[in-house]
Length: 610
Image 1 (cartoon, helix red, strand yellow):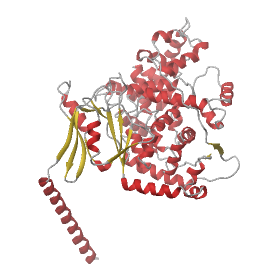
Image 2 (image 1 turned 120 degrees about the vertical axis):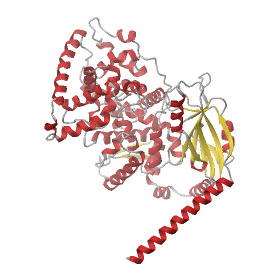
Image 3 (image 1 turned 45 degrees about the horizontal axis):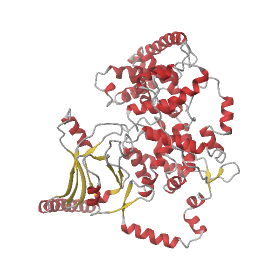
Image 4 (image 1 turned 30 degrees about the vertical axis):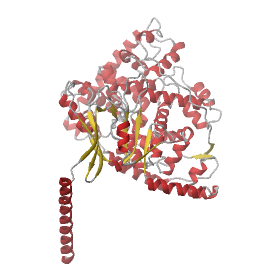
């Protein structure tokens, strides 16, 4: 044993000395070969969120260094900034320096004429991550791209004009030679190489996967689980699923679907938000809503959302706290009774002593989860900022009272994401609580322990992608990513982490309208994935890169564009309802499925479990 220990000691010592020599050599080279800026473009600003109107000014550079060529962006001083130090700090957080060899592609966006926007570039790395969008406020992107082409080969995507791909010339030559050989291959040999992708050109088998190993931490917010940990867990989950995958050829176990030739998507336009005046026009003199016009009212909400000042009143109806048929007098009487119920439940948990908590482990665990989540929920939103913010106390009270209201479900991480916008709008504990109860009626299955409803939605999403975008479905299958787990966060908290706080409010009220179908949330997922198809495929992203890319879309999605695309996909599928598989029609509530579901639905038409 002693000789081996001596050997290890000497080996480690040599490796340490070698590293020190390498570092000294690097330092020497840097001192002899100084950094050489090739181009520096001022007036290139970063934008932290898509909805933000605030730009962080900076300088974009291409720099030749002793260790390679780097693209760098650094914030610059802004004399017009109201708080220069704060803006500089935020700029420093998104500053970057990346080797050009790590660049996989970039989006080069030109603004529409008359829009008042700026040309922009968003760099996409080989690992799937993205830098923040950079806006060229004083010039075009041409000079930067021209200089960049001096170091790497660029090719515009054949599928998407705004996407520019970095070409690996050796890989491209190999791909061409392989494709030339494959031109003489018959259908059988191609099927043996990739049976799924070949079969999809004629038909696809829609099967149910056995998914019994969903790791709870995958569903936690990004404060609790780092991005890398989430990716590792997702891979472990995928391996567990592969071991449990069921293959069955029994009749009725799957439905054979012929690849559909869908009609073009119609051009859809969003409408203005519903105003107070328009909302009141649907009311009867006693304050209830005209049942003959209720569908038209909900369609107005779906097509445009609500004005901010109307949300406090309208959300109560959309969430079932106030029934559409209730008069003003009836609702006020009910609200007074519900206020008493809320106070009684609140008193119950507040009366539990420390001594009782020693013998009440479930309560203590849930209380701890609530306290942790409240401390980190939407703290960048002014309404929840500050350590002694009374709104945090109100949020804590609402969530703890829900634990007493529904002790079977209790509290699960992520519920605070649903509660905080309600409190922001209602500004009242009682109203917030009962709206939250209504929202949990729609979403509680997302938080059940077996995660069966989440798995079901992932399967339904995969089925829809197979119909709408078989090219992407083929690719995800080939990369073992067709379980759609990279969309977990989207579905779990209804895109709360993907859009700004106010855009989330707009998105949710659109979903609460229940129009035009019960699974419109999944159509939003399809629309986003459809828009990212070329980036995912042209960059040859695997599971890890897809996860990173999807996460990096957060705060850079345009809610109106996504809603418009999702609605267009719905109408595209609805126009093909006679060709669609039965289960797809059921998801969308169209065709014979719509007739049967409408005939069996309750008269009041309140939407549950959207």
